[in-house]
Image 1 (cartoon, one colour):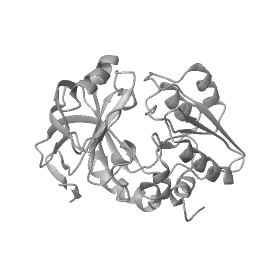
Image 2 (tube, helix red, strand yellow):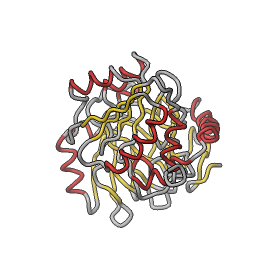
Image 3 (cartoon, helix red, strand yellow):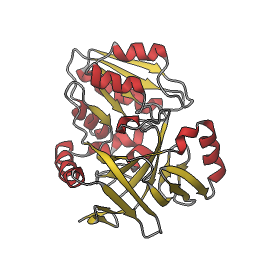
Image 4 (cartoon, helix red, strand yellow):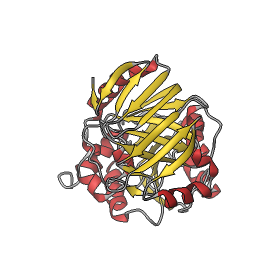
Length: 312
């Protein structure tokens, strides 16, 4: 099994369970239960109990009350639904107030357990991510461009790194991991981004890129084949028009085309998060969605850090 699903064992190494911990896996009806079954079997090698519970499919600000109780009764929570619940207040409460380990791997597929970003050496990835992260820590303004004509500039106030080493109480993040994320200062983000890799709830965008114009941290205009579908999503919750985050991928093992979560971890990509920004100290709650684009050129305080997806 280890040879067939090295990514599942990479997941296990990242989380590093002990045999007394209770693991809760949260899914919904849209996820691949084949992948969940493999992951649960591998995790059971080092866990006393694996529980699987179902989430609703619709976008919500927080978990249902019965799920909240289950989260607080568990030691390690794995959010493996078809969409992200990372910004949910109960997730932050569980992690920071109660010291739970909370990991999100939404849209996990069986292919991701066979190879790709989950197979990275997370000790090496952590070193690389932290070194790049140090070049953001003292900065205040980020500028991103692409050869396709994208341009975005914003001031930022908080920077975080996702290293994939989640073995201590109160730790956690995304798996696959490998990301630097920035919380944006209100009313400072502006520009136009052409998303040409993927987008939550839209899927692949290689053939039909989505162009979004941003003014003062808000979506001002949407263009492209998926315009109607995306605007329908925005109409479900107006908070999704908020530009919440800029992220930079740092994981060279990532394989594009399988999951937005893995796409956004790919070294050379960048992504924009829309909606909930409370994790970054903002005031916009509700759901959070990400869009990914490739071959980013990134400068912080006018210092070039990445050119056409390659770290300088």
